[in-house]
Image (cartoon, rainbow, N blue to C red; front, side, top):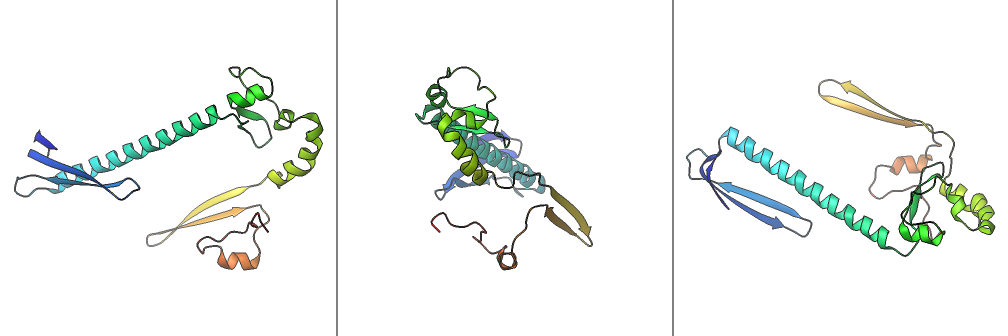
Length: 185
């Protein structure tokens, strides 16, 4: 691409090329002006490249969100979500139809257990709900920062949860370490 009378010089040539399968790319700029690019021109090009990257990432995120919404909206399965207290916030059209509600009305603020058939509610309340929402007691998370001279910032995280055992604590910063049990165990 050639830009005549650009703010960066008389004529600016840009080449944009994708690199790899993950959407990474490179932008190359050239001009015949001597001393190109100056520090100001380099700053303008870097700013333009950053803004372009942010715009493309935002577009990609919005595109993925639209795809996900279309998938959920067109699913024939019941799909919904609720607040942590169990108050339903969204049910897809198929889910609304499955429970006998008009798919175009607002989801009534029902507890998610009310979407189950009555004979399944006791088991869900006694078995599934406690497993899905362990420790529903109030938790506190504290984040603090401390400036450590000459140019370090210390981040500290503390919570009121049960913590981790000593074995897990020794390995917690290793890649792919988890304290969760595998589903097949």
